Structures are given as C-alpha cells and as structure tokens.
Length: 489
Ligand code: 2AM
Image 1 (tube, rainbow, N blue to C red):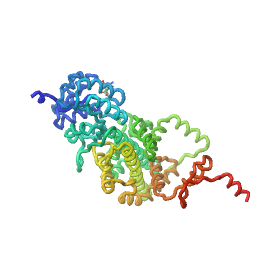
Image 2: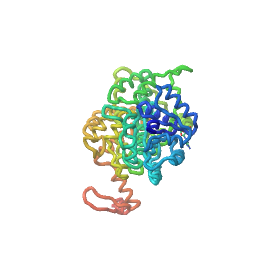
Image 3: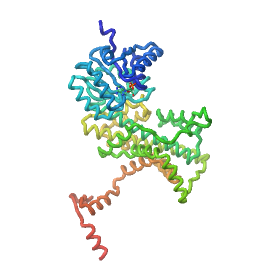
Image 4: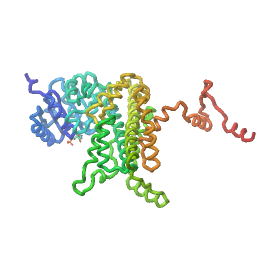
C-alpha cells in the first residue's frame, strides 16, 4: 500500500542536467523524487514539473526524507560536480540507504573514481553505476545517450527507466549496459574526445572555406545546411548551420565573428589523450584538437607573434576569393576532407576503447557503442550507423579505415583531402586535425615507414638493437666504427 506513495527513482543534484533529466524521467511516467543541497533548486524543479504538465515529481529538502521517499530496492541518480562532491553526496545519501539499493553517478567522472566507489559502496551492499550522460541540456530533457557501467544488477534495476528516457533511434533506445567497473565513464570520456575532434575538424572546414575560399557566413550556412542532408548529417553540422545564421542583435554584424577565439574545456579531452598515450594508441586527430584548444588560449601571445613575424618580414597571405567552378570544387573538396578526417578520428577513438577494454576485461561491444551514439549525444550522426555495421561485419576490425566500405570511401576522398590540406598549408591556414588524420591514414597504409632509420639511430647511440627484414634475431652494429672505416676506404 505504502509503495503507491513512494517514487520509483530519485535524483539528487538539480543543476541544469539534473533538472532536465528528472523532468524527462517524470514525463516518461516514472514518479521521481528530487533533492538538491541548496533547496531553492528543489522548488525551481517542482515549479517546472508543474508548468511542464503536472509531471509526477516530488521535492525533498533533506537526504533522509529524500531517500525514504523511494520504493525499495531504491535507485538514486546523482548529478553533482565530479570529484569530492560526489563522495560527499554518496556519504549523505548512503547513510539512509540499505543493502540492495543502487547509486548511479551521472556526472563526467574519472573512471577510476567510479571503480573506487564501486568497492566502497559494495562494503555496504549498495550497488553502483557510473553512467555517462551525453546530449547537453536538451538531450537530458528530451532523450540523451546513456552509458551506464558498473554493477549489472544495478543496471537491471533501472533498465526499464533508462530505456524509455534515452533518445530513441530506429534500432532501439540509445542506452546499453556498457560493462563492468568504470567502463561507462571511460566510454563517455572517449565520446567527448571524439567530440573534440569533430568540432576541431568542422572549425577547420569553416576556416578553409572562409579564409581560402572567401565564403561569407550566409554562404557557409547554406553549405552546412546542404552537407547536413548528406553523409555529414549530424548534430554538430546542424548547429553549425544555425550559428552562421545568427546576427549580432545588439551591435550589428554577425555574432560568430564577434566571439573571442579562445576555447574552454573541462578536461575529458585531455584525459582521452592521456589514456591514448598510456595505452600506446595513436590518437593524433584528438590530440591535435586538444593542442588547438591550448594554442587558442594563448590569444595575446598569438597576437604578439603575428606582429613579431610581420616585423621579421613574414608576408600576409592574401587570398583570392574563389568563384565559379573553383569555388564549387573547393567546397566539395572540403566536404570530402572533413568526412575522411572524421573517419580517422573515430578510428582512433574506437581503437582506444578496444585497447582499454582489453586491459580491463570490459568486453566492450564497439558496434553497440556506435549504435547508442546515433541519437541523443553531441556526436550523433548518420554515419555512426556505418560504424556500427562495420563492427557488426567484423568485431575484430583492426581499424575502421580497412573495413571494406570505409576503405572504398577513403580512397574516393583521398584526392580531395590532399587538395584541401595542400591549399590550406600553402595559405598558412592551419588544419591540424585534417593534417593529423591524413598523416595517420598515410602512415597506417604504408607497409614500410622510416622507422628503420630511427631503429638504426637508437642502436647507434644506445645499443638498443634492431631487427632485420630478412633474417630473424636482434642485431647490434658498431655504427660509428664502420662508418669511419667506410669514409677512409
Ligand atoms: P548546489 O546547488 O547546492 O550548489 C552542480 O554544481 C550541482 O552539484 C549543484 O546541484 C550543486 O548543488 C551540486 N553540488 C556541488 N557540490 C556539492 C556538494 N559538495 N554536495 C552536494 N551537492 C553539491
């Protein structure tokens, strides 16, 4: 009888993401209790629940009342700042929870913190999930992509809810049990790293079209709109179209031109690159996007450098606005370069996930990850379906670029890709992401790379030995002595 009055689930932490996710859950028909340390946010959320359709949401003003308002076994999502606030919130809530209850952390948490908490809460019989949530404010409210990892039983406790709350695409809801431990957080972290890459590549396409092609913002809006109806169809291309259309209402002109060129960040991209390095996975496109954020931050230094180099005689590139067939060609080339570069970036992210999965025994299903990214999240894109299919065709695919379908696409776009990078370099426009992707592709596709020379150098100065291409074994050569004797002879 009592259970009729109790909520199916609880959510603590009512900042933007928390509020929207709570309202989404309530709207899907699951009565929810909410709590926030600062109680005004509880009232705010109650007010919204009322205004947005009398949603089944109840507000609570202390951890005890909040926890006791939940059906057993209890499930509580926490959405507070990553790090210590999560530990503090767990401590405040778990005091009132009991064995068999579940805590789900929906923040962008470092995966090892989740693994520590899984152990700590397990001591009290509390089940734990670290759940990546992507899609920003709108995704949280209307359907995010959810990446829950940790206790499988905990996942089962909330499976009915997350399947309804997640974004829905034609092949199911954008949620799946990711794996054990901190896998959900790790997958979300790599998702964000890939997102850095996508945004960087799009900004480079913009840069080349604007500064080499001479395109205006309204032309860019049209082109991105067109691209969004083809192979590049994605959330990021769609919002970019919108961005090019926004005027500066207050001061005139176009808003995108007024924005300071310094990129902010919260750290998941850095973690991705650090993890790639730890696992010896090449992720140059994602690393380039991170480096560009760092360099963007040096606004004053860049301005000063431009002056110094101008003083030293550096000529400013004067672009000729392209017209007619030339312009059309550039636009089409950039579209192809963007697509090919993107595939390489995803290949890097996927290979990082596979390496981590192998290290941790997570058994990640890469095709399934591509599927749950098809909707809800920031990197949602039509082409993720192709990635899903590539891994379905071959779960052990060494690299996306050698999937037969993608291989064909890469070869078709190769000429355009090189033309764009050449033009950009010639003009002194940096396309670090596109260049990194192309270098990745070019290195990966070459049976013989100049590492023979590096091996020779290592053996020369450090006696590290080398292998030969023709005879097995480890070899060391007295390079200096032999070289000298050859000079004499
Ligand atoms: P607040 O509204 O009381 O600040 C994002 O900052 C969310 O995390 C907010 O809901 C915020 O609550 C919450 N938060 C941050 N630090 C917290 C802590 N130490 N304990 C509980 N909630 C915290």
